[in-house]
Length: 385
Image 1: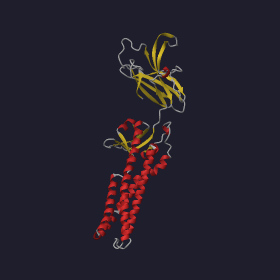
Image 2: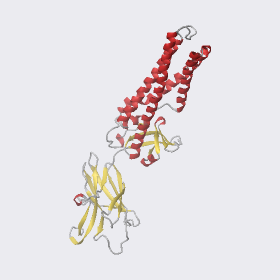
Image 3: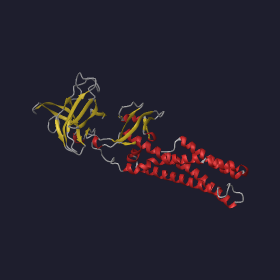
Image 4: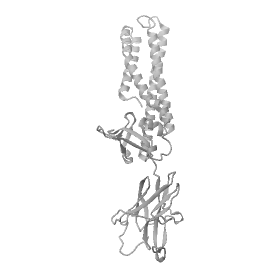
């Protein structure tokens, strides 16, 4: 992380003490002792600033070898295989690789700049202490060398300021990338709600919350975008477990797969006069294993609701089915009159929405909600899920 405002202030004080003291000692021989005293006073905050800068700029990259070794990439099959990591590790594990390389490059530049600053400070001190009492009386060559080192130090200080700004920007881009993945649902997060109550556990941070939250990498927390109020602390991140089941509806209706006019039949398959519209969805197994006991429940949840009812799979005419990996059997979710508009019907979408719930043995259920309007083609359109 970039050095915080307090440590940046310490760095500014160090710069003023060291450069100011050196300038005073050189420009005004009568104030040379005072100048050396100022330079000496600057040694302690210099040491603190160097330590703080190296810590904040290096603590996360020092962890990156271990973080990148974590088996957190690829598809997460289930909760047992999900690995939760802190925000610092999450940056290295999940963020864009080019952004990580950019951060590491500027971090390396910053570290080298800090070390070079210490070297130049030491060289200046050694030149000053080369004779008892210090000073450069009758030492023109040493004074020339001292001025050269001081000029290099001033240039290095300016370059270090630019590098630190670039490093802060690189960290900001990494944080934005992590926040985008959380908001999109590619990653999920959990944390302890603020204010923390002893004994309370971590809870899931809902995907929708990332519309108003951002991560604070330095404090492993989630804060509001406006005001930076801390909402969660101890935040951890993991890959989202993709649903093993998927409800598919294609409004392009390839091969009349998702809706068609069907002949009316009785319970044993005998043809009856008339036709009806049948709308179907495909239930796809996205997992690498056979899902057993897959069941589909359909209900209308609008102004004219209906009770939840199991529906039969089109291929086996049964309410339960085992689905192999990659298979996507069809199941009817709404049968409607033909012609679609009949006398006495309510106008518009009063007969929807339609809620479709799919479950299977040892698998979390999924839900998709469809708008239904018999006056449109197609009559179904996805609302949510």
